[in-house]
Length: 102
Image (cartoon, rainbow, N blue to C red; front, side, top):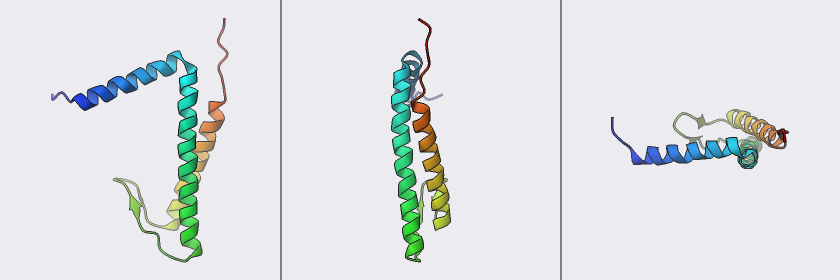
């Protein structure tokens, strides 16, 4: 087994972050709100990109990463709507607090 320093450092950082989220619930709420902003922004961007292609009756330039390939406006609408729903849900859940016994 080869030792990879990058994976080790990333594992330590993510493990420390997970531990901080368990100890301090505020950290989890902050990260959830950041994720909500990113998801909402991505959803609005994908929806506006697809609506622009539909209104101009043009083709989308395929945008893709390794396994995700968005090449038609209907796919972009679906992904955009999914990101909007996920961002809204994350934002709503970030406002819930746990009442800890004192």
